[in-house]
Image 1: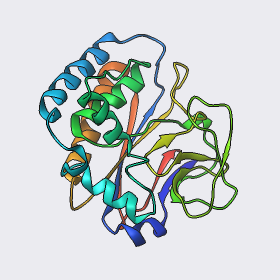
Image 2: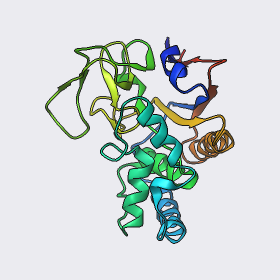
Image 3: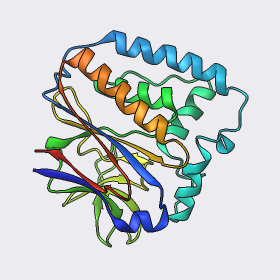
Length: 236
């Protein structure tokens, strides 16, 4: 059994923090699904038209993440959250490349709702998964790299019992636990704030679940994490 928990130290800083949890089981990610990427292309085109002339830093759906990162000592100019980085790429006329069907679906939902999302291979995780503050000496292997980083204490991270899974909260994921064609059990966290975008987080959960069932015919688990309900089981 594996739980996902947001530690109290996170709520001490961001009282209205929330996470929409989607878990997919028995996924077949081996078969190409061009339709998903076509949907992502359409979403990128719509998004480009909507944001081409905007200052993303001040966007009402992006600014709260910058404030939260700053509250945890993370410079959002140097380490923008994942959705801000994707929107900047789109705004500059760049395309998000196709990786594999699950990652493409993750990116589709993230862009559609302007929400930071992760996707983690649960079979590569060890022990409890949590959002917490790092301990000095925690280890992180950056996505696409072979050199491990040793963290200082006090950085907001996703982590399992052995390793850091994301650095600087929602900035960068680890190479270990990334989604590949072989991934079968997948945890999608959708980070948000009750006072800002709870409705969008819940809508993104439902949209993701429907598309997972449509394209992968897999079993789905949904839950919603906030201060009153800080933990859920993601692997029975």
